[in-house]
Amino acid sequence: MLKKTSLALGGAALFLAWNGLLLLFLWGRPGAVGPPSPEAARLLPAQLLRLAQDAEAELRLQRELLLQIQRLNLQQHQQRRQNPPKTTPKPRPAGAEDDAAVIPVLVLACDRSSVRRCLDKLLRYRPSARRFPVIVSQDCGHAETARVIASYGAAVAHIRQPDLSDVAVPPEHRKFQGYYKISRHYRWALGQVFRTFRYRAAIVVEDDLEVAPDFFEYFQAALPLLRADPSLWCASAWNDNGREALVDAGHAELLYRTDFFPGLGWLLLAELWDELEPKWPAAFWDDWMRQPEQRRGRSCLRPEVSRTMTFGRKGVSHGQFFDQYLKFIKLNDRFVPFTQMDLSYLKKDEYERFFLQQVYSAPEVQLEELQKEAGKDLGAVRLQYRGRDSFKALAKALGLMDDLKSGVPRAGYRGIVSFMCRGRRVFLAPPSDWTGYDPSWS
Image (tube, rainbow, N blue to C red; front, side, top):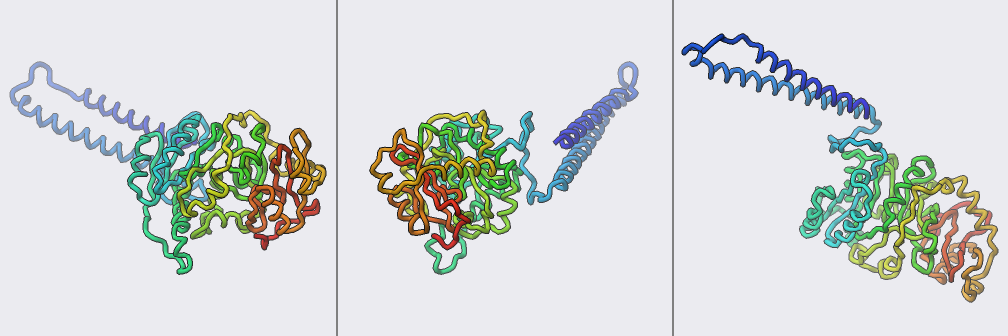
């Protein structure tokens, strides 16, 4: 950054110095004393024209020199990067804050003009336009949605996915064309953020998400944790079991590690995109992220109370998942000052020490006991499952999401799902000698 600034200042100084010398030269040219002769007066316009042409030529030369300096500056910057950008980056304004602390919000949009609801809340709660630039990437070419995005003017950057053609899909996947287009859009949009604009981290948001008042505060606090702990690969604003009856809304500051990739408002680093981009899938990108080959034993952060809420019943899933689960998720409504809190307990070693002790020191209960007792003001308990069918039966009975992806339960960590039941903290957990996920569980 310092070298870039020095080169820019040097180029500007060269420009000013050259113009100063040119003016001194012109002013110092010998002139006639006294009134000009008729012949001199006749020649004066031609001399002035030549001087103007000379000055214009000098300015063209200086402009070319400045362009050369800028090109050299860009080449040096690209050589320092292990993965040079594929296109010339869009410049960002310099400022006192470290560029690495800038976290753009990438909003993926298509044909929902209700994106206004998403953008209104993002801009309302955004603490700094410089630290959190909003980039709306639009697929589908939907004119009304484009007009809504354009109405925000300079408050957001509007980029458009150029390839609107159908994706070639296997015959048996024709009905999934929408999922293929979504995956293509994600790849292009993330490429713009990390390759073209060269940001080092990004928050990804879909156009049907509404954010909480402390959405930005949460991700600002999560960023240093992702950078410091290689066992973390994302931070999500979403709790898959975030229905009001299943969370402790009075303790919205609680954060957890989870082995399940939640999505729905998530933070990733540029280094993760370097890893994922070459093998990005043609479709179903979120389930692909949940495969062991991508997760590689890493975890995400997630909150007790969700910092996003989806309002989009319209979509490729035709509203089935929305009506069954998503519309019941509680959105946090109070600000938690995460950046002023010590979150070091979320680092892997420390987290496992206290979390596993908390889980396996809790008394074990049976489902029937849990369902008949009012648990308010009572301590945490543990409900144990011993296999796939046992987990699914207990989860269904308690109102939890019971699906598994490569053996990992939603919101689970080391197979443990933490939730509230009738006012009591409950850990749905495997035996303490748990050795890992079984990818055949689904």
